[in-house]
Length: 230
Ligand SMILES: [Zn+2]
View 1 (spheres, rainbow, N blue to C red):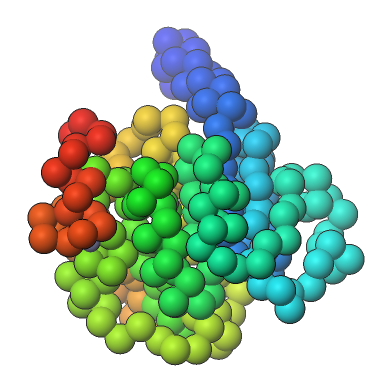
View 2 (spheres, helix red, strand yellow; view 1 turned 90 degrees about the vertical axis):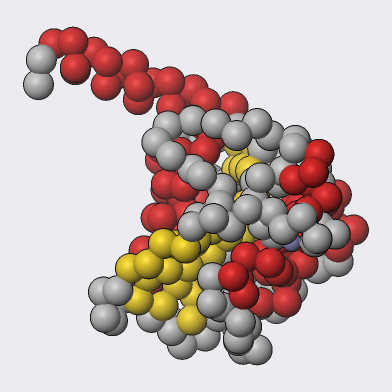
């Protein structure tokens, strides 16, 4: 590595840390599903992370590792649309680690309505998908999932039969998508959904998931074009 490359990389890393340090990041899920995302983002430089625990039955702080406790602000929240809307009002980015599919769709609705970028993940056994939804550019989750061939939304919690290795893979990917979007590095198209099958190794990218003009949620935002196409 040349001297120039080395100093340019250092500049890159410190700029990413500065951006992450200032960003308000909200991770929605439970303590069980969200902690490795929080840890990854914290170690990358994010200091304003809120973990919205929406599972009333979930274990609370007593079961959370003391070190991980300091990575984020933890907020126990009863799941209502009004509560979620209120909680994420100051967010620069929202991350979906929910296990309930109906809540995932509702979170997409709230983020679209309130112009919040949502980094979505969904896990079914050993398969998962990642999708970054940018209001004004992207299809909402209700439109994107059928377009990506994900019609059958599982009724059971998504992580029920999932091993930690899959969850941590997903969490690392969610963290990377978030870092890329916030620091404006790499490519976050906002209309691409990534599908990965951990057992077969099959990887698929579904492209062209633009807002649907006829959809009352994503179509309305696309027509207003809140975000310029980069
Ligand atoms: Zn839509």
